[in-house]
Image (cartoon, rainbow, N blue to C red):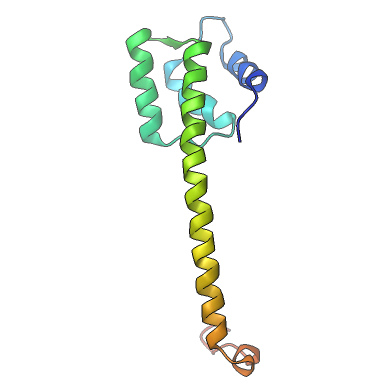
Length: 113
């Protein structure tokens, strides 16, 4: 789900107290405060990219690019999760199909109690 640009701008301004951009080391923190789970590799990539433009700070347009890239990465991951959950559901249903009703109602083994 995409984060509205107004919200991104507000969060950016919270970290950009002096108006000169956010500190490069805060890119991951600001992304996570927006609810984006950027991986450490992705954050390192953003930091390296930001340092080529300015060694100390990231401006809003560049940060927006990082947000869009993080959102795109999350969108591809969420499809994989749905596929994995469907596979788990199939496996669980298959497991319970093999158990008799009597077996499911019996008390658990002593090791579980």
